[in-house]
Image (tube, rainbow over all chains, first blue to last red; front, side):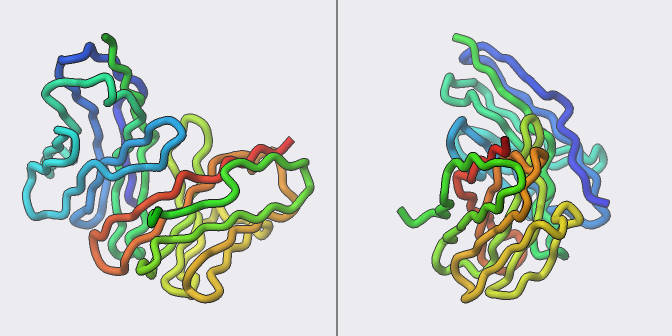
Amino acid sequence: AQSVTQLDSHVSVSEGTPVLLRCNYSSSYSPSLFWYVQHPNKGLQLLLKYTSAATLVKGINGFEAEFKKSETSFHLTKPSAHMSDAAEYFCVVGLMEYGNKLVFGAGTILRVKS
Amino acid sequence: DTGVSQNPRHKITKRGQNVTFRCDPISEHNRLYWYRQTLGQGPEFLTYFQNEAQLEKSRLLSDRFSAERPKGSFSTLEIQRTEQGDSAMYLCASSLAGTNTEAFFGQGTRLTVV
């Protein structure tokens, strides 16, 4: 069965310092992996997606993620946090064989301190 | 605004009442998904349509829940005889058919059953 584990429910960083949000996945197939962000009172927005083209994926707003098959990980990083990055982040597996339905992790709330 | 639109944004209902939510997808998208998100959790898949055909329903979708997409455009999600456990955010997403296509989410309908 496909599943996603986000290893931290909350992460707190200072503005200008690096961000690391950790994600491990379980998939029987070569997975499609995504990171979505949810700001308060806003819809989920796609940050980036991995679809087997390249293991290092660049997304919007300076975020990137690296697919590591040997570790079944897809951690999200950003070199320098900005106050506007404070939000909830979801690591997601896409099930291509099931109409691309998405399996979400439980989410990581990112707090950015000034 | 050409994004995914959901109405109403908020609904408060008494236990035992029926409620109906509407989702208008991005116009050219032939796939439409419903997800449910409870506090502190990631969204969970409920059902999806390709055009007007409902292709999969989650076990989470009890007999009190029904979804339709009569003309392959907008969709409705009805909950009959609501229970307090139905209180959640109901999210709609749409996408083009095909592998690894991006799902675009609406802002959701927050249901509170009192």
